[in-house]
Length: 109
Image 1 (cartoon, rainbow, N blue to C red):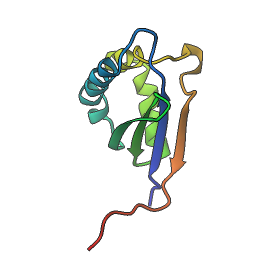
Image 2 (cartoon, rainbow, N blue to C red):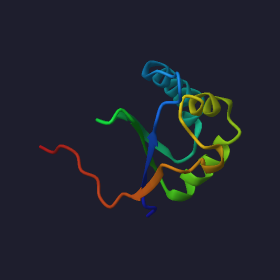
Image 3 (cartoon, rainbow, N blue to C red):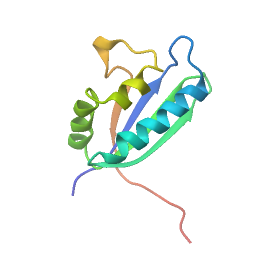
Image 4 (cartoon, one colour):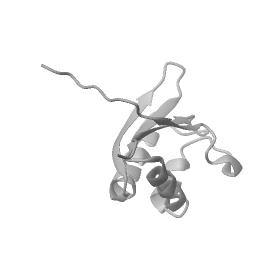
């Protein structure tokens, strides 16, 4: 069985961008790109206490997450979404962490 992977991407807003604009771009990114990617399972966007955001994405496997990252480099929707973030183009994977999901739990009974 393939081990699911949780991707945690820390987001700091780019100069002049707002949370509302980030969320609009995030929705377009979801609809136009991520929903069509093999291995994508779930995504949540959270606001942290320090004012940054974390994009939390669940993938079927690390290999599928990596393959989507490569395809993302050529997506207009991804480019628009990333334009709302403070990112060093030379370090696109900075602030991104992949964690193996050991177990998942849900409410029972």
